[in-house]
Length: 211
Figure 1 (cartoon, rainbow, N blue to C red):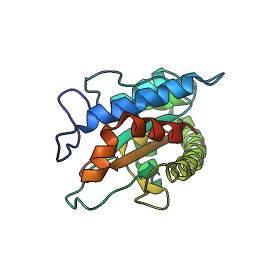
Figure 2 (cartoon, rainbow, N blue to C red; figure 1 turned 30 degrees about the vertical axis):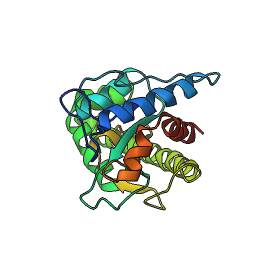
Figure 3 (cartoon, rainbow, N blue to C red; figure 1 turned 120 degrees about the horizontal axis):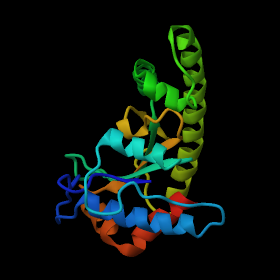
């Protein structure tokens, strides 16, 4: 799983100076501990310290680790400080289409995605069909997971968006790994910022995502 930002990129900063990169790492570590306590499950943190990893580098590392699911943990910020609550995102269909085109343009990536199948001009149509099928299944599984996470979050915090949102976030664009981005709260909101700093609330968020 991924915690947003890191290193020279602090992410969003609350009015009291709370940094997104710090609270998201704390939540992700608690989530990893809960996952590791499950038989047959193992969590891997894309970032387990205060350092920066590029957007595509995060998805690439998830693939290298053989991830079955990718969870990106963030804390949102907007100019309107009255806005609060959690939101959950999956990749938009437009974003999926754009990423499919990029993968097909990079033959080495596409071959890696399809288990080393040699790609030449004759196989371009096959590659396109296989990638489309893989991606649709991945997005469908992402939506299922996101809806479950959103439902769990309702039990521990307010929800800003009542439905799963679709967006073109780069970190969600692994064609073959179900990926979900969780905006745990608005760090720009004073009450949300205070809760995000609270280890007890951090644990409740982690347990809700785990559930």
